[in-house]
Length: 363
Image 1 (cartoon, rainbow, N blue to C red):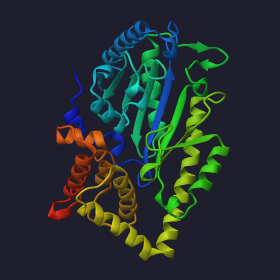
Image 2 (image 1 turned 180 degrees about the vertical axis):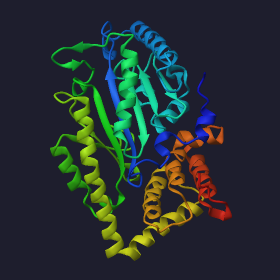
Image 3 (image 1 turned 135 degrees about the vertical axis):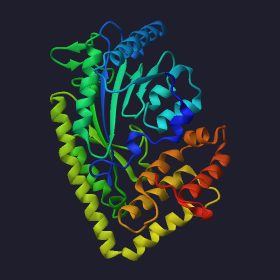
Image 4 (image 1 turned 90 degrees about the horizontal axis):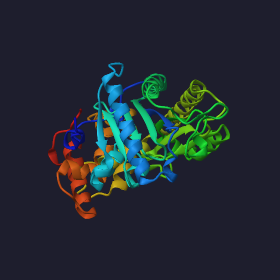
């Protein structure tokens, strides 16, 4: 069944639901596994013919996993090499593929389920990147699901594996378990109170990495930060899941303390910051993506603190993604240049936040 981009653009993905444990601060929990086929060279050394053969083999294996009836759902297969740039950018904004997969050349694909929990990338940095994502803090469920899918695929292929090192991967930091355990957090109060750098220095001391909204190399837009393990060798998958799971509650507690401090010590300033952000988003006639993310961050915190009562968190979460350039163009049904996107973005925000007398969307 082909992927319907127009239908997907109207929906909210798993990580936008605003549900799950600690979802006022934890946006999503994600686990990725890096795997390679033993009989082929890594992607950096693979020929175009190798890439075509890898894609063909893994496409068949994923289809077989679908047919095994052990997999709960259906993976929709997308030939990324055939997609126009705006559709590839859309999948990046949706966190369903990486920028590397979007921007590379040659045979490559992704398989996605309708709920957008599963994403299986073929011919990214490694032959196979399996991803499972959940709303809120739910790493245990994500681990159980990705372990099951990994086993289903491994029943049919031989992964590159070394008895001493574990799974062999293109990047040395993934050698071992090949697992990357990530949690995306919304930490505006730690940013406002200027405690964020101190927190991140502490995380680096225990080998946890901090990245922006779209992973490695991206900036922390909208006060979103991804916390993940840096090392995959020497610990089991379960131990790495536990390591990240143990740290996140501490970060949640820091953010909540910072929010309580702001409410207690500078409530009027905080309320003014939130109200101004909400007012601009409801009334702007043209607005950039960067400014939108910045203002939505204040609004999201304001909703969670009870300072704004007529908009729901899932609506705010959806606006973070639906106001990105590719989503705006898919929703508008046409290509838009930067200036027209800024106008369309402002119009979209007014419609969904009740500006200009429009009704607020609460879904």
